[in-house]
Image (cartoon, rainbow, N blue to C red; front, side, top):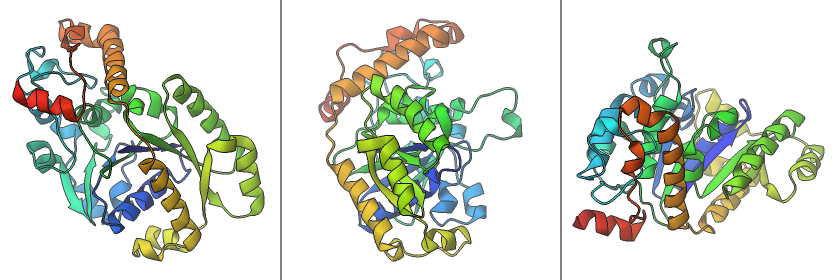
Length: 323
């Protein structure tokens, strides 16, 4: 199951993404996490040191390897260089499972605290004026487009804050999107903006309140977001200790906050993916990107990369591997 965390900057999105990831790992669940935020803090939030986080290999720096591996021998893709972030899989493509061994995971991911963790990479001085952050997130989008995960497997992504989370088709890759919402007018405004985007594409958007300190906060969230509110996180000594570099086992989190994480997991486990729709939406965004900029940049018609007879999913993996 693929899960995204979105929200206003400063809402506690990364904190909640790290808590949920640690909760899964603590329960013995297989979990792969990707930090796709422009501010790369997920590794540290999971307990890594600043030095370890800085040294983490990045998906963005390995885009060439990712393209070459995923391309396989798909006859619709002339070469790896012609692939863009939205290039969909087809017959002959290499599909990946989140916990297998392959060159991408060997180069870009590390195990930490029971989590297979990858990061898209920092947006640094070399990128200023010559690249947008989506060029780094595109590596994660391409990987997810070729990934087959089953129920009981968890792929968690910490998305970039604000409306940028909807700047590409990446937001359609998830079974559940948790929107972290503070009990403020501004944060609720961001929820409404997200809800409009999500509604058009059938995205399962679930609100989790954060930084709740009193009953009035709960009432405010209930009035403003209604049934979209799953639960809320109360102020946490556990989180404050972690922010001071004193990480504690996830089982020591406050009882109410653990209950909220449990409700989030139950929500994810209750979803069932429609693979045909998943493939259809991926193709739709590829065609948009190909026509808007991709074909012109590549000097070829990238809409021809679409294999109309292919549907991603467990059965699709078998057909790919038999080609």
